[in-house]
Image (cartoon, rainbow, N blue to C red; front, top):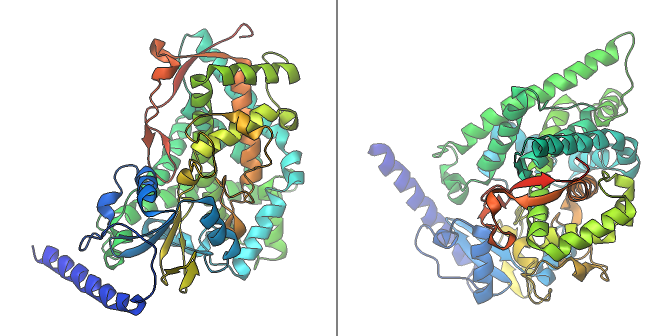
Length: 497
């Protein structure tokens, strides 16, 4: 009981302190927002699906809102125009990250390119990643490795088809994304589907995504950070230790091979980063490599598989889209052929399907929140210092101001449009924009079309249990990524099996 009274006293003292500070912005025009309750502020407004709740609030209070989430001042952006002001025109002012307490576990925030402040170390890491992992030349050089992984998932689906088993699309896409990425970095599968380690590694990544997206009292009431009342930071520390142990083993294995008398030249991302670290350890060392790979695997697997699963959901629900997509794929590739990356540019309708999926189902509905270090002005409103800034790209993608029939899945809207996902068209920014745009965008935009196109071209599909397409449950599951509440399970049939 004494501990509870102490915690409540601390919270009340902190809230009083924050309230006194708020007098500093009296007389300045804050963005509109809902009434704030004592202590909890607007936490009661978030619900189980915050991206939807905040989109609904934006219909009342406008495209820039002011909320209080616990004791944290939060600004929510819900339109392309204001997102452009924040992410492009005032990118420097809004370039810092709001770092959830759980992601500070194992000092990850001190080494992660995602959370480092804009500065020399961040620029150096960003340059290394762009040149040595995600450049066109590097991706072209090892696309044969990713091709092998796509062949394997097609063989897996064929096996399920022969056995009359339904395919869990999200699970299959996750395993493929995991090994596509691991082959790009390590030239090997990081999780062999035939071993228990595959499930363990998949579960580890999923646990990180779940804990990272879990509402945490320590984020809403920073005074509680040292107490970690829900154990989120402790859980994350265990996950990071387990993941880095795997990654460290792979790095050590390669270092030993390079020191041997007959080293193998892999020419993959790990080779390139090790060479840089040996020439200039100030640019990147083993610890930075480990945390960089944590970022890549956490950000590049669950997000990619989520987009593939939602893409299959929408294609299965829209028979006309399925017919058009199959027609294009068969005309360019031939019926039943696996899609190779070189053919993506010859498949405009497939590209439209991917863009439309990203519009309606961005994997990170809030991107990664920003934090403003100094007071700024946006659209005539004062944004207080240290505010958390959320860009609700889920709402932006469904904004009727930017999109005609915004709730309809209609890939054709992109056929005669120059709008792309590269961070210049703010109606569609699933990967963010500005300095903090996702560096893995070039790889994702190869992986998603190849997986989705191959699954559609190699098989005919029907939903498990005789469920009709228009009866398919579209419920969402909120986390760091927004996945499908009920996994998509479908039966594959084809005359080429």
